[in-house]
Image (cartoon, rainbow, N blue to C red; front, side):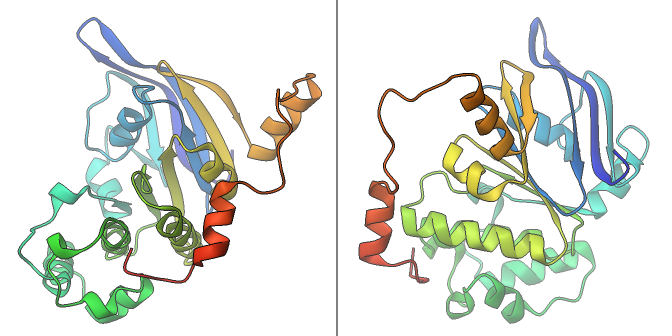
Length: 253
């Protein structure tokens, strides 16, 4: 793939006698939102952590923006943004202080208020991280991935545990991150989320890629095979009703 920014070839990760990743291969195009889908324990998070240089691989090859993981891991770290979990932040620092701390680590000049504005958290600038709601914490975690202006951003199940409003707002934020020019790689086990967000998806199960295509093509191929749902699907679902009644505007979610 000529315009691939990530190339993963025959990736394997073993823990003793257990093989968590079994020869996974895929490529991610510049500027797309690419999804790794699968149940818990499928190997998608392990795969992401290897690409992020956070976990050693057993074998296989990985390139990010033309840089080889084995030889240029430090260079890869400089061009990626990784969403931290809550435990990765100092709970007693306010948001501005955390941003300044991360900017110092990256040796970057960053306007904290402008960055918070991109995720609609400017009114929480003086709040401590531990005082934020679940949705606010997730939005802030995405904001911190933007500090070093990365070419690739990795988001590991970013909407888990969020209510429908917070989830849809985070979808809009992820799309906005892509519009800034970044490539986004996301893991999720929410299929509706992948269908809305992702340009292409790889379905991972038991450490192997079992399907890779656009969401539309995967669905169309299934229908063409004769698949029929046992129950007729309505044009809206209960989540749509919830959002219609409560709205999708930014809140303290």
